[in-house]
Length: 124
Image 1 (cartoon, rainbow, N blue to C red):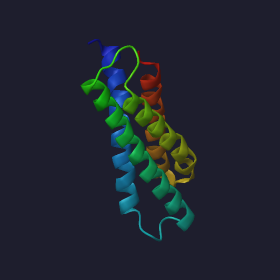
Image 2 (image 1 turned 90 degrees about the vertical axis):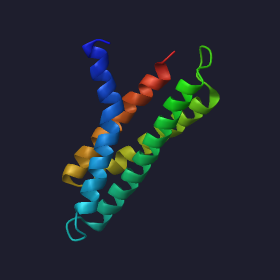
Image 3 (image 1 turned 180 degrees about the vertical axis):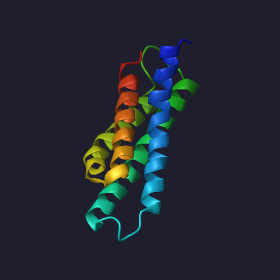
Image 4 (image 1 turned 90 degrees about the horizontal axis):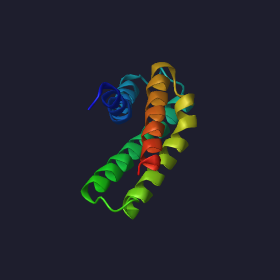
């Protein structure tokens, strides 16, 4: 494996879970008085849907590796990929509404997931 492939794997497979965990950590350690109520609700919605998106992406990738069909991915992989992509797109506006560093973590997670799902869509 060359350095470019290694960097792409780290960016697309490592960044979304790490930034989502960072977002949950920031959400947990932000006091109730620190965030406005609507920002906290937006961050909660974004964190929950991004966590679901990561779970869908992990399922899709693991299922595809366990059951490598022919030229096209298996049906459960395709459905999980589309659902995960939908969750990531749904979370994007809520991620932008979050506060300060939580916004950075959530937007970074969204961007990483979009790259991951793009790779899943164009993979042979």
